[in-house]
Length: 385
Image 1 (tube, rainbow, N blue to C red):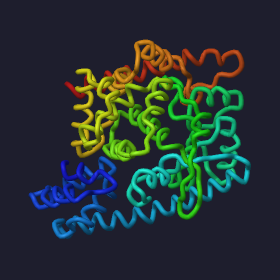
Image 2: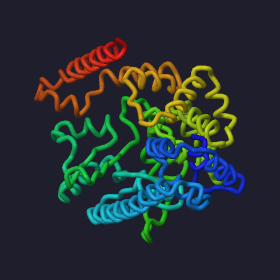
Image 3: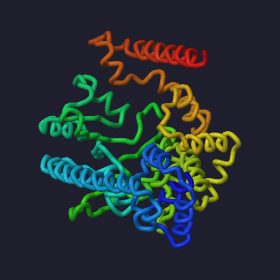
Image 4: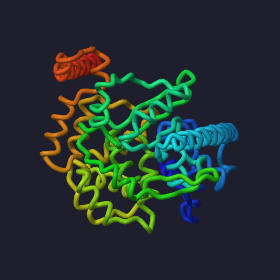
């Protein structure tokens, strides 16, 4: 794990390269290393640095596996990047502004090259007003939405959700159309208009594209990582790359995090990258994340990285993490209320209620949540018995 952590960055200085050589020569369980690299989304970075620093220290079979994976990842990422550029051009031809989010754009932003990050789908950001026009464009290209949204539910979906997923070619091609960074029930106040005003330009395979600013990407990564419980080390590796930048506007970050109600999420993420990846801990983060509770959660997250396979957290454990990362008790209350009352496409798909009967969807939501948690308690009891 120490070897994997040493390789979890875009660039390696001479001192770190020496540590990597010593670790590689010190009796590594290479089979386990490969499992940990896959589980944490770090195989591209692991291969890149081992190949540059000490290829001779890696067993031939292990090195051949990593090299073959890296070459396939490069080819796949290049294909997806081409698909992304064609999609952006297509959306632009329909008068729809779109920005790439995650995927190839973030690979270049964080690591300098599309080859150094694993991704399997494409994510684009559009303005809320353009969600359904963008959806029509994708469906015109043969993409099928995950959920068919009735016309009368479209405004509600845009208000309370943040993404639509589309699949094509039997699920091999996946595009996610985002207009926010989390569902409304999560309780983060995201100002999409401000993000569009701060957008920047970058070059992707020779094409100029717009992307969110580094500060907005950091906030997005913090919210995304918090929602998923920081289940992979690569998420923190990318965050660390941003935190090391000399041109990061920390005043804007903390001011915006306060408005978004995610100061504690930002502070907790920075404490994690400080402890695991040697990123200096800002004073604000130290003050907000120094509690014993968050220290315990940080240890739990770090310990999970050592498990060979990503472990799905139970809904109860995931909710507990979310609540502990909320800024105030009022935010916790809003989270509970949103979770219990916000109707989702799953609820609409479970029961079709039309006209006046549609007011019964909160009851459908409450019933489905109760049944889900009853099933989880039963499963947990069975595991313990």
